[in-house]
Length: 253
Image (cartoon, rainbow, N blue to C red):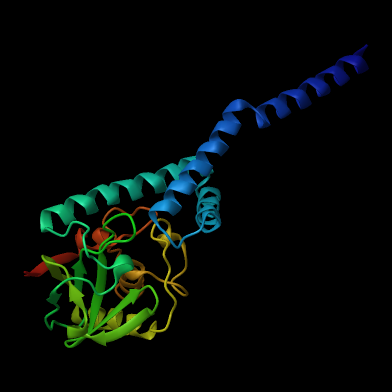
């Protein structure tokens, strides 16, 4: 009789475990993860669902969170940035018209010269919204930036057109730290471009980079500061301009 009860208990446990594993709520979560992945990739053409999923899976494990919790955070940060980007572009008179896609040299204003280690921001559209674009002065007359096609490049300051009301900012660290950050960014020239902003804080400092990842890595490594103002899983261009470490010193209009 005891044996029968044990067998019955084991059978019940297996059935319960399977029912939990394949419960409607489990399927619903999986379905929602797929939905979020598709929306994230749609807003960031050039990324892949696999790339985003791998990043959130690794982060979820390290933080003892569910993939569902993490991907909701990633998506919410992306949507918040989109809303802010649309607002800023409208305020600056740079709503999507003839802006060049993917951070290219758009706009009718030319960057002025500035101090090595200073940064600039310009409105810049991807296919769906104003991601913005940032770069750094690698010398008074040169800038270093990451753009699709070229990846990380160094060009003359006046070869970069920007949109109306673009800004130049000073990063509030020592001159030596700024110089070291700029030199590190230059050392990355030739690195390929990454379209993934949504989880770019989770990838290493080597390898593919987008514009904000390049600057974030440079100041993280060479000035020991985090210029991402909200510390989310993605560092976006406006996260840098909103940082407590950056101060606007000029507006281009």
